Length: 61
Picture 1: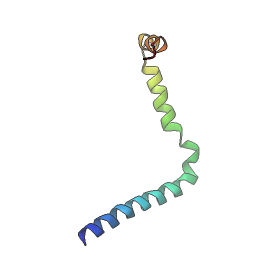
Picture 2 (picture 1 turned 180 degrees about the vertical axis):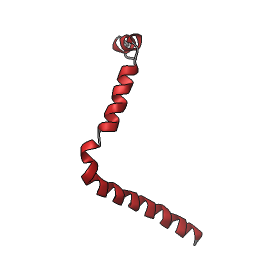
Picture 3 (picture 1 turned 90 degrees about the vertical axis):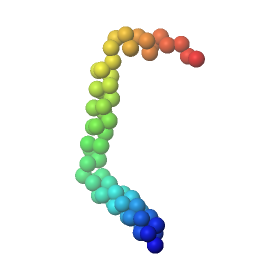
């Protein structure tokens, strides 16, 4: 019985998260890609010129 309750709690959390994500999608769909874009921009600006040259001239294995 304990396992069944634990499993029921896990599935309830999964479906609850899916429901919340579905409801907020209508309101936040415009801003959805803002965080990944900021992260990629920060990673691109964090590279030094030496790192950029090393990746451009890297030989394939």
